[in-house]
Length: 366
Length: 124
Image (cartoon, rainbow over the protein chains, first blue to last red):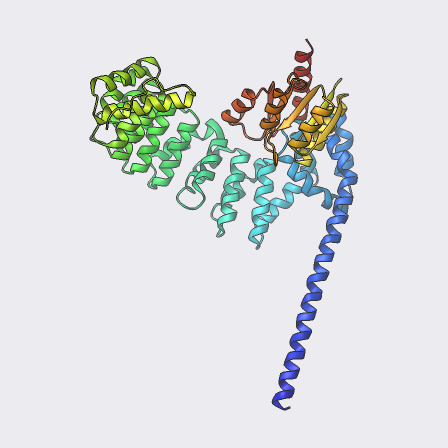
């Protein structure tokens, strides 16, 4: 065969391959469209039954659509199932209970449990997602195992699912995911969903080796108002080696707002503490809302570190009349100093946010 | 029983609300966006309005504010549906003039009960 013939043959083969590929793509799309239309038609026929199931008030009203949906043939059910799963996230109460009952009867949980060990990461993640949506308690242990999955998306889905299922025993494995094994926010949200049952594990995690685990535990205890853990959080604020964890502890104590929190936060604004911790403690005193913090915050207005003084002024502007009086007095007594500037700015911001004219129109000179 | 105007862009939720309220004996007009809801409410004022907060174009809070601005729709009872249980969203809705709010995911039964009680309040 000559070189010219070889080139012609190659080109012909290439053209054939391209045409074949084009045909496969076109046919694939057509098939996909046909399936979508067929599924839409099939599920539209069954939709009233599904609405009857989730809209029913009594067991009697629900039982008939439940039986009919549970015995639908596989082909029709396959078209209905995605819609039924998506509805799970949109309803609560009896409607959700009825829907979960239907999906369990259709074997969704059983299939999802099996799919947790599939080779495909998409299948494993989908299965974890479904088990979480169903709140399937028996899936807690397999999902904990999935936390060590090689795929990050699968691990994240398992964390979320464990939070949805709400098994408090999963708290420790979830906490250990905070150090980069799953997104921090996701871990925190899952732990919040576990409720008060997770608190012993969260308190234990305050002395975890990994600062990320300590950080997430502190964050969740503060967000869930775990006032009984205030003493432990005071210990974290005072002595944790990580400034990030200490900052979070200050924020958490501001949210908890017990007397022990107040004293610890006032102490943490002192010059012996790290800059970031002092700033957060000054802010947290505003969150806490006690007028007992006013003298300490007033002193901080003259702090040489800008953000400490600024945060103290903002906190004072949130603490009611005695604090507003402290700001006004500072403007008068320390005119021309940075303390007066911080005080004036805080009052001006408060006025602007309230939509009223500035009570002190003259800016304090810097 | 009453005529209820529902504005909700999620067809699953919209269908469920329509089903539940019709089951409770109400006449329901359902639309998928805020602008249509506003237009319909002005053309044929219903007895109560259910508005989703997060809709494309006009949000439920904006529709609520507009309804309150016009004398012919100012007195309509309005319930907001919000996917976010955030205090600020609820506060925004109530400031805009909503009478009540329902947080998603919701129980269809509770929704029907809320519609009933807001209507009863408005009628007394």
